[in-house]
Amino acid sequence: MAVPQHAVGDKPNLLGMTLPEMTAFFAAMGEKPFRAKQVFRWIHQGGVDNFDAMTDLAKSLREKLPSVAVIAAPKLMTEQASKDGTRKWLLDVGAGNGIEVVFIPESDRGTLCVSSQVGCALDCTFCATGKQGFNRNLTAGEIVGQLWWANRALATGSPTKAMGPGLANMPNGERIVSNVVMMGMGEPLANFDNVTNAMDIMLDDHGYGLSRRRVTLSTSGVVPNLKRLKERCPVALAVSLHAPNDALRDVLVPINQKYPLAELLATIKDYLEAAPRDFVTFEYVMLDGVNDSVQHAHELVKLVADIECKFNLIPWNPFPGAPYARSSNNAIHRFRDVLQQAGLIVTIRKTRGDDIDAACGQLAGQVVDKSQRTLQSKLEPGQPHRTISIRATV
Image (tube, rainbow, N blue to C red; front, top):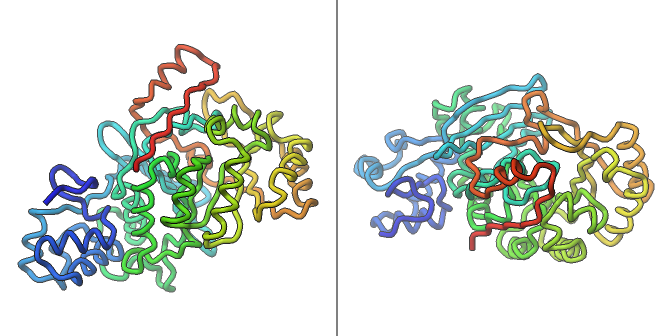
């Protein structure tokens, strides 16, 4: 039997298998399909990584499974808790690399911000993750493993304790992690197959049972893969816009040089035909004197005039060496007022976890850079990078 792409050593990692993949794996061993469902539920609903704990499996199967497969989630490196209740974990994904995962508790939901890559290749100038460079794509097991790990840690107070059947839920029946946002380290659509497989597991009723409305993918605009996402796994959509015209967006979000605004917006309109929400959320980071003027706001109104959307204005979160400053509250409110007067729905994102560098744009993790960007930054300080490297698995 060929070892799947999501493997640890020479053994497949069941944590990254979709239910159809796991069913095929068990069938190759001569096992019935219902065995795959049992194991799938134990892993994702029970938080179990020990085959012996799967008490409704035949003893002979429990004894066989460790020799042919593993259940391996990323390991904890560090954990931090914010004064506002936000929690951030740095998880080890090997070879000196760490990814950051953030849990944001609110009165009506628990949102997990999940990473899709070690670092990011897109080099957005205002983002700490992009400035660290890029190492590799995460596997499906490493992506869904962040949700597996967080549910287990939050339910038991310790990532080393299994939850057992049904204990992924709070006492009132609500899941501890009720919403997932693919907004952590990396560009999700540049790691298409692994991200969509991981979302399949999140959405599966035998897995985490999340609805498509409660899983949001945020992209900077990898247009070809956004078109693929519409057909493959349409979920709620957020787009990192950050500028009302191509000239400015080319600088702030360099991928715009490859997929300019007209092409991106046309693709978004098409995507919304299949999306579980009939609008796109545009994320717009507020940079003092860069993109926050009243004129910029009026430009933005014209840009999105024919798209169902809402705006999330994000006060920029600083990181060392960044050439920007956060817009003043007055500037943010003036900007918001222009959008609202045009009939747009606008929220100003409440900054959460900034005291532990867990706020939007601050996730940096631990990246062994293979893109040479960190070296180039040292050789050419302050110079914009014009090379766009997009790594997409197909």
